[in-house]
Amino acid sequence: MKDGEDRYDLRNYEDDVSRLQSEVDFQEDLVGNLEKKPIDSYHNIITETRPRKKGISLALIFILGIFAGIIGGIIGTYTLFLINEKPIYTYEKVNIINNKDRDNAVSVAIRKVMDSVVGITTVSTQTDFFSMEESLLEGIGTGVIVDERGYIITNSHVVNDGEVQNLYVHLYSGEQLTGELIWNDELMDLAIVKVNRSNLPVAELGNSDDLILGEIAVAIGNPLGLSFDRSATAGIISGLNRTVEVTESEVFYELIQTDASINPGNSGGPLTNIKGQVIGINTVKVNSGEGLGFAIPINSIRKIITEVIDTGSYKKVQLGIRAIDMSDFINIYGSENVPIDYGVIVHTVLDNSVAKANGLLKGDIIIAMEDEKIDNYRKLQTQLFKHEKGDEVRMFIIRKNIHMIVILKF
Image (tube, rainbow, N blue to C red; front, side):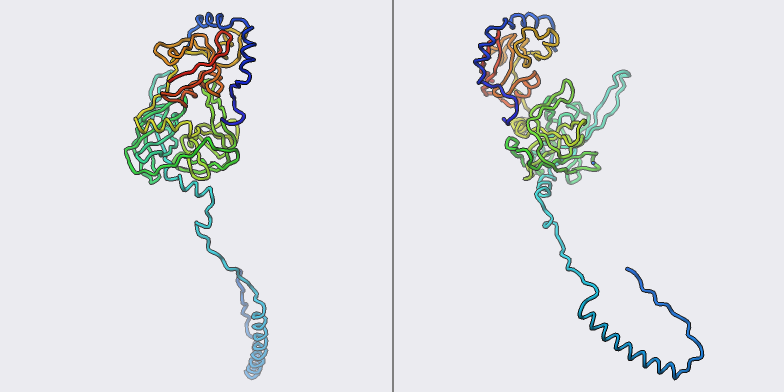
């Protein structure tokens, strides 16, 4: 966890318990209300020749020629003396600079990861809502190779959230290969694509948990299509653990913020540190502000990458509930006697589920998981990506105005 992000503070736990014990038994009314509604980019010197005058004798010309020769010799000798003493022009020695002399940390980082960056193009079928006529929709994005056997990470929206008719991968060598979508999740905006090729160049993954504000970050991608493929931009890490609301129903959590220029075609490309290690996958750009780009931290998806490569798929742990956001509940029923203005209210506990096995009940308000505040159901689902079968997790809830801790065993 980084400083400044939401936590559930246990120091106030007992005070919360005391205060809530004296409040109205909110959950009993809440459960009743839950039944009312269902959820679903040189000069030249010119010598002038004059005509010779007539009437001059040959003797005179001969005498003048000898005289001019003597005078010219004297002047020439004197001029040569001056030139040898102080040259009219001086030249500096020019050093030839090779590429290695021009290297800097950013260029080294770019070179390290560049050949593992790929372009991704797709063709999807789009149906018009009114005419019901179908048309082809072309898409383009970026990806990065994470395994030499052909596994590539990109964004889910780059592959149209799985609804693609054709998918092509464009390698650094210029070769185009057919790609296969192995796994994707719209919530995480993440997808894994595979090509039938081995011994591919692989990007080194870094540690996104060890990032600090102000360190250099490099983004690589295809911002304006394949005509500008593998464009690199550099900036700094300008924020950590950012929450970005893309639409009213689409929110991303715990993102890396950078001022390295990121445009739509960069989606799915790598964000690297100064060592050329991938620390994030570029995912969204806030159009209302300049210098704001975001990436999914690589550490949050390591488990997914490993499992998909090992097994061919990824299964997120499931809690086994249907729920409603507290904010939505307040909009419907009002805030009277509501003990808290955030969280997730359990609407239904499914049979044979983790929730059922660990004692969650209808009407429980989920407010935190470990040290992560749970604002809404989407945040809850995002937190589940961090865990796998066999993990034990503390969940903080409010049940009948009493704060409780439930240990979940997945």
